[in-house]
Length: 277
Image (spheres, rainbow, N blue to C red):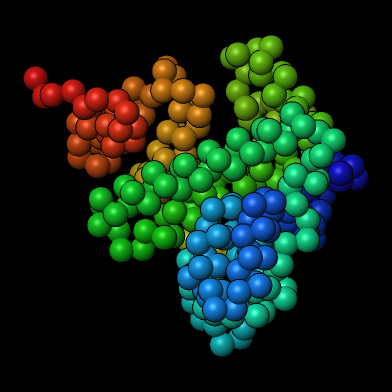
């Protein structure tokens, strides 16, 4: 675990140089593809990468660090990025070497929390892409990636600062009114939202990604899609009885021009859709 990076700049510097860990299942699936050249192509690799926010971040960071002079457009779509990079260079330069499960083998509680955030991020990306399609957003993959990576800094800090993250979790369990960013600032000296913004800038990730993940742009439809998807995934993470969900349904209904009851049904089909009065 990294112990030397105590302030914001220190963490940004460390995380910019650190090997980004990936999920063990991601590593297994990629190895299976690597051993079967007939099946390994940008599309099949993208399907694996897209499930893992850490692997997605690793790919985008690598591409930005090794950007060709001839490349004039920013790549935010995973399959498009793999087409640009190529299958062999991908396996050669981005083959998983550090696994989340190995990194946190002595911090089981932190590992469980990390996996929960990864799962939550994947759910948020699914909601976002579904709503983008309903909104006829032709570039829905950009929205999906933004939702998937929205909590990237939180996942990375669970991996590299598990003790501190567990302390924050304990503080919030003791005080239910304590906001996440307040607890983070007390422990780290900065919020994870601030860290996220600094990382995106330091890694020179596509400007569109920063825009789509920035709460300050919530007045724009695509950004609102991402933020509402992240909120819904967060609030429903422990069940569909969270007190914040009714407001989420109303906001999503406004975005999609639906009734809240319809939204309840499309995000959780097990909930019966109530007939209109």
